Image: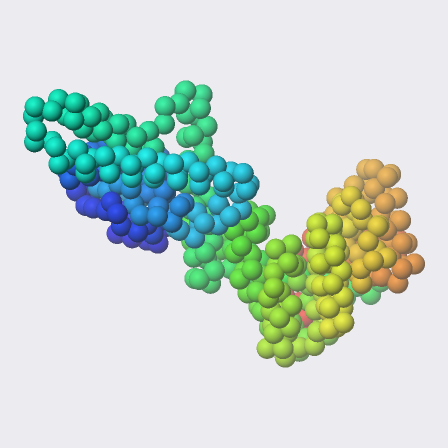
Length: 431
């Protein structure tokens, strides 16, 4: 039985054939797999693999044919590693590692090909029993070929090194499972957007909201973004996921604005920001939702500005020219927070919650919040204080002149229907 993530195969079943093209590799979850090679036209078993071992990867790494035949020795459960997954990991690896990997595989393939040529030559003389030298060479060939194949599969390592290998296999298995779960979640509509009110502090009314993604996994349960967003960024899944978030948030904004003239904040990751489709995806989402660009506030982190400032400047100017608002999320946590305020077309600073929560226990945090609020006002920027959890924090921030507040003191992030109810009744869960 195949689930897309795993394959369950009965004993004696062929998994793949020597000489066939490779489409995926496997990690054994349960059971045993037997690997064999054709030596002098006869299958010769050179390895029996057990739970936790990897096989079938060579044909995917160097895009060549299978070097061995794999058969299920017992009933086995296999975790599937797709060609795309391996190709992506190789592409993201260090160039030196990629080169070394390629050299090792090329040398193995070359040695095996040379042995095969020798074998074909020796076979012609194998029947000549009087030629003891040829018989000896042929016997040595069989041993060397078997050892070579076994060396590729069974590494001779110390117990200390074996611990690292086992941990690597466990980590790889876990990573593949999570990535496949994430892909399936996107295909099966397991994601949902929640919306947290952003409050006009002087007036105490809802001015906007931030779209926050949640994953309702049938296997993992309700999963917050800090447990899957980084994986989505590493694997490139953040591009289709970010597009989905933008589309859903824009359609939600259309419905929300039927009741109150609020704005929608959407977070952008660095990977999205650098993708070629990023600008078109946002503009299309806004157009399809029949809303204006100026009701969308795009939140970016300071790391985006620091990683590629030239690209950031070009992209942000395009967004600004198109009518979008730009906010810097977690302001004050970067290494060069103030150096880019004059360079980029930023409308809003979001004071990081770590400063907000520490105001009454740390005088420096209090002064940082006061300074950011004053700086923003002098630069004609708006300020949003995030992570407000206590009433006294809200009062102090209002005295500092913060324009907007966001946090549990007003409301937790809520599903679409609940947020729509807040707008209809023009109220917040907490006064």
